[in-house]
Image (cartoon, rainbow, N blue to C red):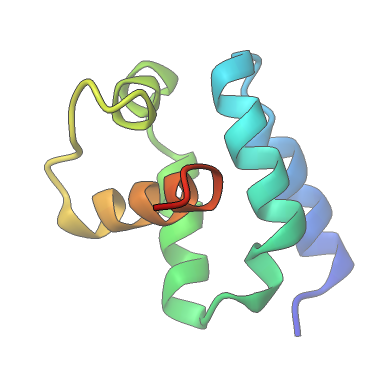
Amino acid sequence: MVEQVELNRLFWHSRRGMLELDVLLVPFVKEVYSNLNEVDRALYVRLLECEDQDMFGWFMERSESEDPELQRMVRMILDRVQPK
C-alpha cells in the first residue's frame, strides 16, 4: 500500500507548471499510481526526474525517450487519455 505522505510528495512533483504536463501527470498520480507495481512506481519517479521539455515532446508524441522503459511509462499515461 502506498502511504499518503508518498502520494502527497508525488502529487507536488507531478505539478510541473506546464499545463500540458499537469493535466496528464496529476490525475495519473491521483488515480493510478497506488495500483502500480513496485517497478512501475520506481519508473514513474524516474520519469519525474526528466526535463519538462523532454517530457513535453514525449507526451505530445513529437519524440520518444531513448530509454524504452521511460517510453513505456509515457505510453501508459497516454493510454489513459487516448483510448484505442
